[in-house]
Image (cartoon, rainbow, N blue to C red; front, side, top):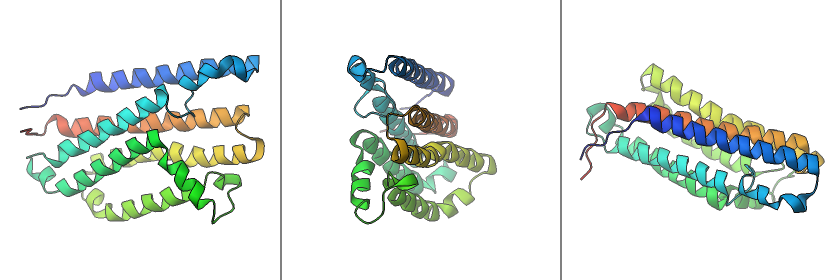
Length: 225
């Protein structure tokens, strides 16, 4: 069975959904700060980018799972250059399945609670899970260094840009938000701005990754039996 994917329509749809979620979140959050009564805006949780088990979380989990599936399709490609790297593509598929599950289950927060027992969780390390995940990212980077280094230059740069966008949010703005939370709590306007940027960068980093993966799949032969 041949798989045909219209990457332009898929990506534009995902961009539309992401922008819609960001706009809805921003509008509700703005009204929330104007009114200043948490009890009247409990429904904000359904669209708050910083909350779990809501619409944005479902969307983020979905695009991560889509990325995992694309990596899997690359791993079973019969195209010679891709087939030689099948184990690497499959490994990335497992990584993104985990990230998709983590987005919903918030495993990183539980890991952060564990890490908190060994460090001073204040300031930029107020959310100490960043340390554990940062180490795992470095290990993954070392394991995949040869794989990425042998890629076509244009594809390599695209993957690195995607990672930069995602990690700018997941790590960079997460650290800034952690410091703000440590100093002024999670109800401050600045904290809301920081986590809005953080989650937005994460979503668009993954959407850009999907664009890259769909571009790779577009002209490759995939056999599904």
